[in-house]
Length: 345
Image (tube, rainbow, N blue to C red; front, side, top):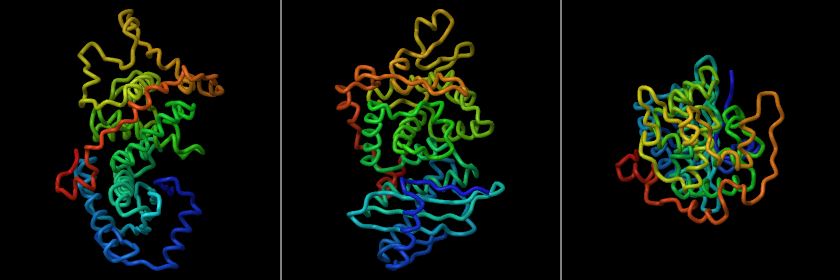
């Protein structure tokens, strides 16, 4: 039996404190088929509960292709809502013998951020838990859940990603794919996980992304699953190609536009054209100038490779940051789409 907790950066002590604070000061209750909500006012409790049911239904269809059955026991939601509160959340549950139960969710922030970012993020965690019934890699779980947040929150993650890469706080993909718990320096995991999840979802869609995760969970052989579902030769090639995409400003990609395999030829992203003509495929040079990518080439059991980086070696140069940080704000959040009756795809 394993208990898992997901969400924004909350310590266990803070989660406990939130429960105590809510119980001390009282809250209004509201019950739906799958949630019980404690919130500062009856109106907020109802709004959060109804939105949670909508997210649970619509996001399950978007990710899984079908709705989830009702849970045997509802998930309690403790909500703290105030304009002065930063947006954040934490959801815990228990895996035991292929079953998942013991839901508990804490959310906080302004009304807008709770409804358009924190709540859909946390609901997506419960959908993944109900579907996979086992823990997911942290980068994939948090990264995919962040994709359903409001574009203003996503823009923050994208700005932080550039800063982390420039200041040598990125996580090499071999280490990131192996993580089963949050690292001490956790914010880069959120930013980088979101960016990679978005990169892969752009190419093959949400359901193929989940199929890739399910395949990798079977044996932990992520390079094999990656090649099967996305045709990348290994994690080094994926990392190099993803970095190139980030340097270009993360342009939107058409579904399946990057990989166009034929019967006899597999297109390897990020390969060097000259090497390809010689019958081999090696990662592009951007991998070798990236100060944190070198750890992806370290052999198991060997110390992580270190590098002395200079500003000109950063994967994104200082002059490029302005263009990279320009994120389109036209796409509605999942909450805005639901409010208008048009689910974002």
